Structures are given as structure tokens and as C-alpha cells.
Image 1 (tube, rainbow, N blue to C red):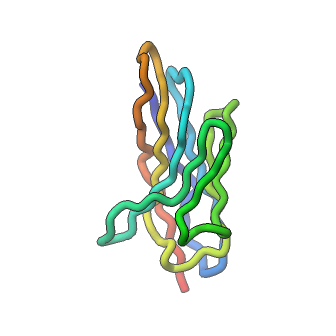
Image 2 (cartoon, rainbow, N blue to C red; image 1 turned 180 degrees about the vertical axis):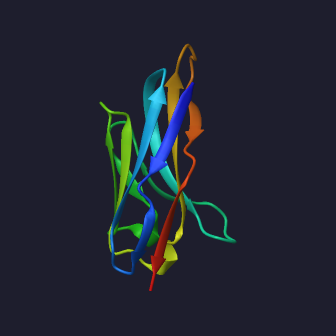
Length: 121
């Protein structure tokens, strides 16, 4: 079994910073792409940032220059450093990873449980 556990959310004021973490555990053979998504109340889930197994990162326009995604392959961890936070960043943040685990011959998507980020003005 594979588990993704997100953490690091909280409440900050505009301009503040938070670092989210997502830890993968279980019978993991390899982790390919890892992405962060967020879902604000009443809105659809949206993609925020992604990082490939080689470390190449991409960002959604609203967070470019403010958020940084990184990963520690040795520890099966991914981070999302969020700086200069704005009220519109308020959402539940989810990590998603494409993981090859156990005896599976292909990789599957796994989701973390979500962590709340609240930015007040």
C-alpha cells in the first residue's frame, strides 16, 4: 500500500510564508511526477505546481515567482515553499504523485489528504 500525507498548512497574514510537505510511504519502487493542486471553497480544484523525477519544475501563472516546488528523492518527500501569500491563495492544498509500487508494472496516481492554507488580509 502507498500513502501520501500532506502537512504544513496553517493560517498566515498577507505576505507571509508557509512550507507544505508531502511524504510518500509504502512499498514504493519509484516516484515520477509530483504535483500540487488546490481547491478553494466553491471552486474547482486547480493545478498549482509540478516537478518531474529529474527535478524540472513548472508553475501555474498565479503562483510563479512566489512558490517553489522541490523534492527529496532519498526521503520520498516533496515540498511547496509558498512566499508572499495572498488571500486568494486560501485553499485546501493536495499533493498528487505518480508512483510505481509493489509488483505493479505501471505507475498510478496517488493523492494526499489535503492540508488547509488560510491567508488573511
